[in-house]
Length: 509
Image 1 (tube, rainbow, N blue to C red):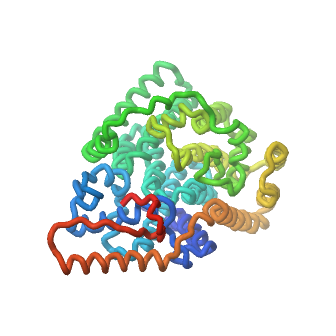
Image 2: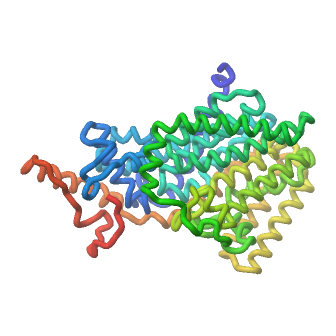
Image 3: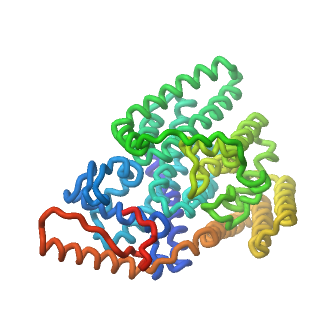
């Protein structure tokens, strides 16, 4: 506790930096509350806005979470609550009027991104004990404002899985190294309750992470063996099953409601691939569209450099390189092969928002970068040059096969060269080191902001003032109807926020 009190500013930075990056992204693109464009987009505008208003009425005693007559002809809502509204952050909706839904969305988005950065810092601080604290902020910023987060801000419920995952990973590490079970047990149950969908994906991933952590620990202690790893896996699996069972009080009604009598799709194990394998390498380019059917593993040019350097770093043992390399290969294969992708998505095919588990693959890249950051003060000049040259060559070859956007390509290559030179300078003299590191930090935050603009800047199109006035005017109409007739009745809308005169747009409420 004394250490936490003394170093509070480090944790504060881990929380604040992703939020600042969000502010920059919104202001740069003129998005509410820093501009005239609404921050509601895609499903956030089509579904969530109305669900949040409904949930506000429930919390204020004007509705029931079990059943609602305002759901078209009426119906149960437990499964809807479990998928869209179970996040504890949604309780804050009671402090916002219906016409302030955009402000509510902004607040909880900022809190979720900030918490993602903070929880990842807690995990990284425990995992990479030798890394300088400031170097770990590269990881937390990239995770808290990663390509996945920016692209999936239209699905706020999935971000709950983002801030819970690092706590689950920290729980796994503590279980393996210290035999402590509490953190993993509680965080797993909470992840499922807050959003069962990402909680399901997190549960698969932490089992894989357990095998990596346990095998590597046993290898380093010289006690690696088949029977031992099987015994450890069974023990850990039972603990995970128990945590899932604890969540069943909230999860089971949601599961039954979501299933609705449906069975697994018949074609989920049909063999197929998402593009060509080279497309995975193309996804390391800055500004790669997300969500998209193209696999995009970009988490920053700087961390790509570190992740590639991981395989050259002489201070990292072969066992760790094989373990993490295999882990990354498995996650890449999960993105590439249809049957594996469908397993991650709950044994179903997904027609929109592709690669919903993409953040899990990015975590493996961050683990590689984190291993390098443990030797951040002793990066070697030649390997840096070799890795930089190799990455430049890779992108040039990929460009010859299928041209990238020219500006993005040359900016990516320029970033690789500048990062390499700055990191080299930072290793030479203590006098130049602070200035070089400051330049690295500024460039790093700049590239994350620029990437966010490229990925999602054009996805926001609605007018913020019009969205707020529509909700306020709709509320006035309902109040007027209630004043004339307070008996039981249903109401339906004839015009939605998108002002579609043809009435053929999809709105879930």
